[in-house]
Every structure is written in C-alpha cells, then in structure tokens.
Length: 244
Image 1: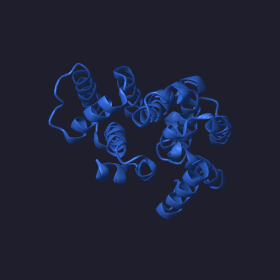
Image 2: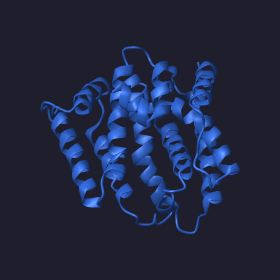
Image 3: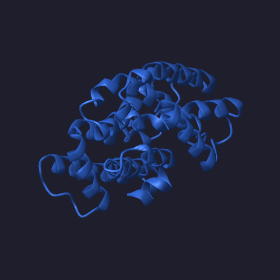
Image 4: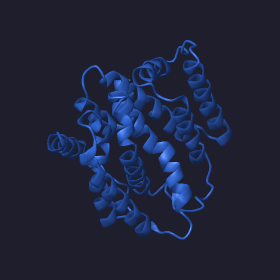
C-alpha cells in the first residue's frame, strides 16, 4: 500500500506519518483504494472499459461489506481491514466509486451545484472516512468541515491540471471564478478546524496544502501545478505542529 500511495498520492502519503502507528496501515489502504479508482481514467482507452473496472470495485465493496472474503487483490484485502477498523459505510465507498464515472467522459459540468456534489462524493467523503479510521466516535463531528475542505481541495487539484480541467469547470464560470469559490470554501473549512478533535486532524493535513496550491495557480493559471515534495513535506510538518 505504501508504494502505491507514495507514487500516486504524495500529499496523503505524507499525512499518514502524523497518524498513530496502528492507524497508518488502514489509512494507507483507504488512500490506495482511492488511488486505484482515480487512476482508471488514465489507464483505459474507452469509457466502457473504465466502467468495467469501476464496477469491479463496486462488486468488491459489496462483497466485503456482506462478509465475503476480499478478492486476491492486495488493495482489496487491505481495504477490508480499513473498513473493519473504521466501520466505513458501504454507501460512502460506493458513492466515491460512482462519482469517478464522470472522469471517464468529456461531458461538461452543468453548474456549480453539480460540481460541489461531485467533489462531496469524490473528495469530502474520503476525508470523512479517513477521520473514521482515525477515530470513528469523533468522526461525525468532522463532517461539516470535511464537506467544505473536500470541495476546496478538489477544486485546487482540478484547476492545477489545465489538460484535464475543462469538463469540470461549470458552465459560465472561468478559472478565476472557480478559484475564488475554492478560496471561500477553504476559509470556511479552516474556520471550523479548531473545533475538531485532535484525533481526526491527520485526515485534514492534505487540505493544509490547498492554500499554497491556490496561490500558485492564481499566479500562473495556464501552467500545470508543481510544488516540490520537500516544500510540501515541510509545510505539512509545520502545519501538524501548529495544529497539534
């Protein structure tokens, strides 16, 4: 799991080092599952092939949640452990998979409401589930903050990828308008953060980089987002100390 997340989702990988040792393998499993779902867009040549892969994950989740043994797939096996550890709800996992069906097509995003719904299922729910892995009793108190944070984080990563962001921009909104909306959502999330139990804060550490990303995109919106791994690691360490 570690190699998958380190390669495909560096920000979340770095955040796991601030989680308790016993929780880290389950966070890595959850993030590896997400990475497997997200990468489908990039490894298929036709949308219907991507739909087949996503359906496999839906079937796998259904089976695990019904008590069946996980398929002999390392990420699926590890995900079963994370589901048990955090009491992760089947529907949240299924909704995350279904949300990424949009990635396979080039249909335009109808509006901001639909974009936020997509981000809620694809990004915010992942934060909530990470919080559940960390502390399932405290996680419900983080849901509102996670909803806002996931939208901001998702928008930053979408805007930072000029090659793929076109279909995600709501009709009638340009990059500048979406950037402003992301900044507002981030500010709202950060205002709620001090109220959260410390036990769930590692789930939000990747979001701490969002302000840095948005500022960089604002300066050069036409350039793919690039921030050095060292700078991200230092920023996350500094944030963890400040939050802790």
